[in-house]
Image (tube, rainbow, N blue to C red):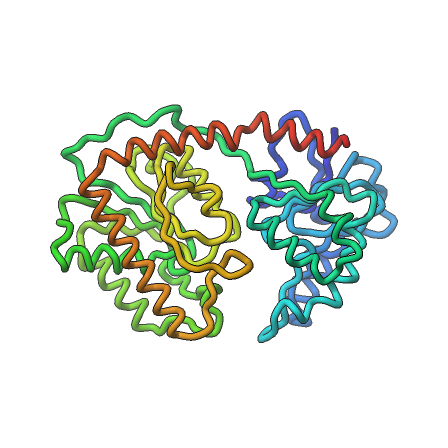
Length: 383
């Protein structure tokens, strides 16, 4: 089978380009919207269009089906789409909101309802619910579109078959991995550990924390108009420099990260926003259970038996609402407080680490099996 793809970036490699028995044909440079997006974004300063359309006059007979990620395919050939948020994906105008997109959505919904669109694959139940909500603005087509929707979590390679008991005389090793350091919760991690040290609830010899992320990436899209001030960033960096339990790396190659995770004890991802959480699967596959927040898909892939959760009230899109600096500060305080409680409990009862580690490995084996995922995709292509 030959499957046409619109790109071969990380999302496609994690969710589409997964079967050695399938030949993938990359249409990135044969996609009209690849060129329109370059012109619109660089020249007209407009937002990106998440659309795929083979160039005019181009034969598409070299593929059996197209499979795109986050795009709507405008083609007469059969196609499938995987999405992490919703389809059609239309970014709201600056200062606007999703309701401004309704006219454009209504123009694209027929492509999802058309007979050549075979399946719409939501990466999570959270994405499925968001799509259900989006379809309220087009009730005449919602039934036809919803019939094509399926939830299919991505596959994940297992790196450990079982986690061995940890050495009790060694400090508990926590690892944070997030290129967007502050959006992923790096600032809250640093604050929680320093407060526990200052309060005498943990000692420096009981824990160590490896932080992997770019401290220069300060913009947090989850905060909208209520970004942190420079003092928050400088204070965070000063704390990292002050305490020897922190080891910071601006970047680490993925293979090196995976090796580190197989030796570490617990992952950290108290993120403000997350479209899915591929790093959670990677940590679990290394036998490294993880502390996450409860946004979007994270409760689905990090259940209590396999990890720990920091919970806040969610909106209809399973996200946090930040409508003021007071909202931002309240959420931060709640995250730091809950994280501190979890850290103190883990230090006091480290036996839970191995239990959750092996439960995490088990859920990857059962729920993210590569062969099962490949079979499901092939069934969708051939229906």
